Image (tube, rainbow, N blue to C red; front, side, top):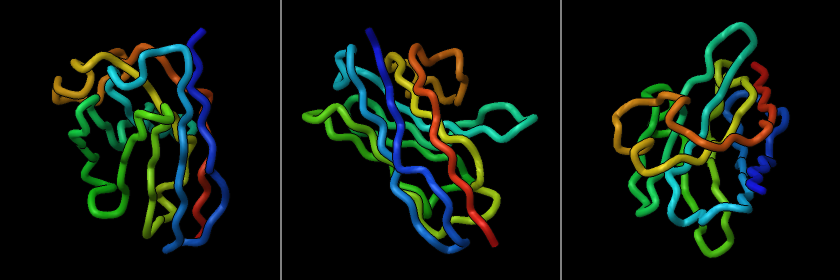
Length: 126
């Protein structure tokens, strides 16, 4: 049974930092493209960052320079270090796992990811 379990969300003031984690089980984690997405009520889920099995990374323009995605293939954990948080970053954050095409397709299509976590809420106050 595949499980992706996010943690690390919470409430923080603007300018603060949070580190999200996603623990994966039931998959050959090191073989997967891993991504972080976020969603606010009434809006579509949007891609934030993704990392290939080999460690290549991509970021949404809105988070470049502020967020860092990383992975620990020995522990099957995905991370998202979020610095200089802004109120606009408030959202439910989800991790996702997909084949390597999900990383190298050049898009943030949610359909390209096979497995999803249940999400962790991030709230940034001004």
